[in-house]
Length: 461
Image (cartoon, rainbow, N blue to C red; front, side):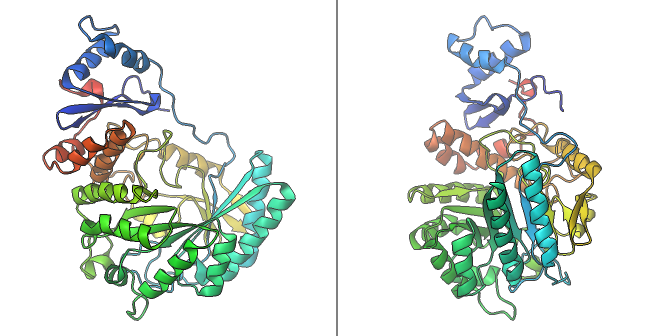
């Protein structure tokens, strides 16, 4: 584990004020330059600053406490956050920016014996570890192009859960283009449906066409309407490119007015070749961050939460994605890994995220050394060490953003995350007006987003 000393205390410029942020002490405060300097001097000297305002003493008392590291998986045995099932890499859509599959990826579906074996293994492990929640997530391709796998896993898991007194929970990421009967199954049997839906008809059809160039909007709109009225929680996952970044607020408002989502998740488009060929690119990070805050405000007026995956977490974490949280993801060919992306994606950046393999379609074999290597990897991210988002974003995607040997300079993803996280801190401090002012200040935003080090003790007063 890292030797933190006082390196976990951060100071972030917000126009003419500063956010003091110590996530491992669960402390945040807005201070002026004079107060920030007095706090820094007091911590550096190891004693209360003689000339410091007495109102700073409660902050100093907390900042002198030893930091609490977030819980991390430990022991030789794997302890999965959830079981992931990649039912197939096949898909009935032709999204121009897809990075879940690849041209020529196998369209085979997972063997049903493999699916049953994965569920049984997971249930046994949960009982051994005295846990109660049997949580399974479905990924693709499009998982509902292999409906027999989804149905088999759901029914097997419910059966095993009843027998072993576990609580089953299912989540699926889908485009919703599976027809009324399968939509009814999702609505009745799946707890949370994450529906890929990029907004109004022109954007949806440009971003996510069907094979052959037909528009996907009518089918996805109908799926969203149906799921809105079903027992399942509807989460809308909206991808943002340079063409829809400036209408994020309108898009969020339209989702809320038209459907009944429990959550809206905005994500940036990945810079893949197929997207560039269609003239689509990731949005400007400053534009995305500013418009995300506006979209969040719009959704809040309807009582609906809007999220960004790398935003502030309620508790400090070592990782904000499945990698590093002991997640076990089973691919259609029986390979077991901690990431749902194709292995080729990891290998391009020098990563090995494999955890094991299926033996004879009936037994999961996990490599303990691979588990330990992945656990260690997420604690070693040099780019993140001086960033105040170190314990919330935690580097974002380990394959796409903080892979070994990546540049120490912040990426666009880092910059937008830093802005959104600072605004979230201001919201938590009940200062939303300051956050709204910040996102319109194009001089203050780069000063916040590009700062080389946020560590208080490295700050030049």
